[in-house]
Image 1 (cartoon, rainbow, N blue to C red):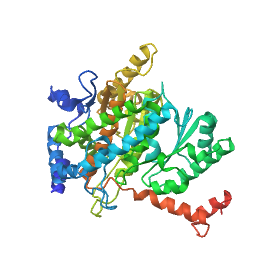
Image 2: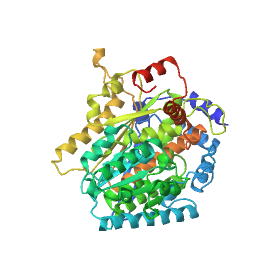
Image 3: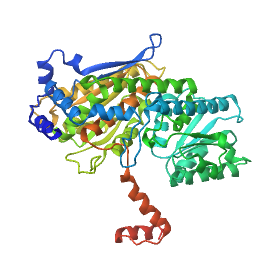
Image 4: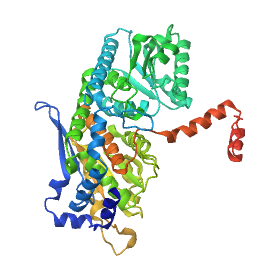
Amino acid sequence: MSEAVWTKLQGLEKPTLKALFDADPNRLDTFASRIELGDEESSTGIRFDWSKTHLDGAHVAAFEELAEAMDFDGRRAALFGGEIVNPTEGRAAEHTAQRGVGKDESVRLAAENHHRMAAIVEAIHRGAMGEVKHLIHIGIGGSALGPALAVDALAREGALVDVHVVSNIDGCALEEAFAACDPATTMLAVASKTFTTIETMTNAESAISWLRESGVEDPYGRVVALTASPRKAIEWGVDETRILPFSESVGGRYSLWSSIGFPVAMALGWPDFAEFLAGAAAMDEHFRDTDGMANLPLRAAFGDQYYTRLRGCQTRAVFAYDERLALLPDYLQQLEMESNGKSVKADGSPVDGPTAPITWGGVGTDAQHAVFQLLHQGTNVVPVDFIASIAPGHDLAFDHHRILLSNCFAQGAALMAGKASEDPARAYPGDRPSATILLDEVSPATFGALVAFHEHRTFANAVLMGINPFDQFGVELGKEIAKQIEQGNTTFDPSTEALLALAGIS
């Protein structure tokens, strides 16, 4: 059935963006929608504008057929129902339960874990562990990218605790955090689902040594463990009262909402962290309860599939015109490419077309002076997402924000319109797609909804392709070979052997 739909999609006409707008005076109403967050007293929201993509009524209708053929409704119900949606590992994927939307028992357990985390956060803020000015959060992958993004986005000013996220095994990263912190007023958060991740545990041991050598009598007493393996954390030396558990059914790159969000709550305070969860829950409910084209993450997935499958686009760019969202492209790289960068379907059969595009991006307006040459005049067509906030994040003259937003909106307009010229070097082909996500403000609620939107967009893409977005075996082989190198009992190819010898490792 899905093959027939793809055949239909491939045979549809592909009008230009200009032609689509000319033919439909209501196009903006059809392809731009807003989601409201909060209550009437504190209402805020986000506008999602997909009108500058090449989606039209015929393509949307066919993609809705594809969603039906791929049992999108059933897969979505399984996700929210706590059923096994990760067949290779036999697991559910219950990150939405962390936000209060999911299977009742899982929501209840998540609420209990959040209550425990809130109690520890608030106790620390009250001084129960002495003066705490700094927190070094040690993790990697999903245990670091999400917290780093959230802290940078929401806690640049007025942070209750100065948070430093360290992920790289390169000691330079850890030393930089040490230099910024007073060991007498520093806590450690060690984040690892298994509490065995080599990069995280090596960095944690070095941080413990730093505290001890700096005169802290009980360095392990300054540690909070964030893990799905509490027993391992206890064996390592963390007291049971300072272990914040989360469920095995919460995947690493979807774990920001669990105890992995501890550093975010430490920086913001619990009320703002709760607002962050509520914003994500609002997006969960929209995604769960809205069908077809009106479903914002599914609509975005239709656009993604259009460009990868029908136009052969191998990359997708994300540009945040807001310094607070500078780390968003990094976060989305893991979310999208680790989830959907697969070559087999969930049933083990080969994928019959391209899967996840390469996600990349940067910050406006810096990126305009670096990579936009290729976007406007290069031979590669790259779909672009622009993300911005109506409200600025600073108190400087509004000229700063006016120029910032003017550039953001101008780039989308220029990509679409292009410009003819008798001089080929000065000609812009135009008809290049973009989508715009416009937040009322960068707040805990809107930020939570923004991240949840991308999670559901990733899941929707996976369903349309028939793949499992919740495993990541592609990251394992390199780790296995690194362990073999450490053990020193394996021979490798001549190039690798030469590199090892030059570095003094062999």
